[in-house]
Length: 157
Image (tube, rainbow, N blue to C red; front, side, top):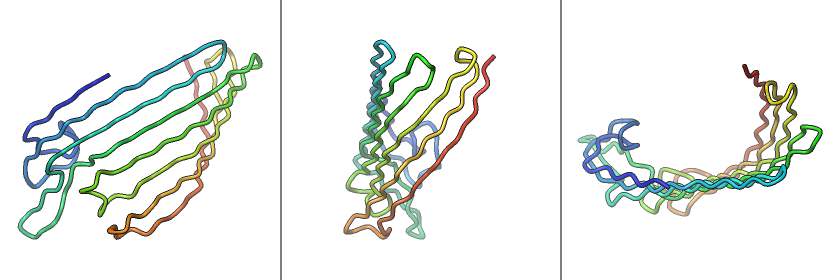
């Protein structure tokens, strides 16, 4: 678990990120957990960021903001004795009330398959994700959905 407090930060991510127009305060809380048992694994991650004044403006009324809100990720997987691994993942990004005009809520539903070769030195991995990007009533972005397919090859030493 981690707690990070930034007072009068000038960057969107605290110490990193795009420069803000004015300094602001932010608090970030993070937690991740992992459970493994006989080929089964469950992992979860939580990130929650707050900022009393996340929106900053310049003289031309252009906005830059701290992304505040809640991020969650859950993954369950099972590794078969044949070195095939099946995984399911759910991810959600829920922006805070003040930035919903600029950010959409995002949800990912992912199914993945991994094949380990030569122990775990060579890995073939693929997954497909259904992405829901929801619009808020006061937002300017329309809701949209996407399908994402990934394929990866990893070589270990």
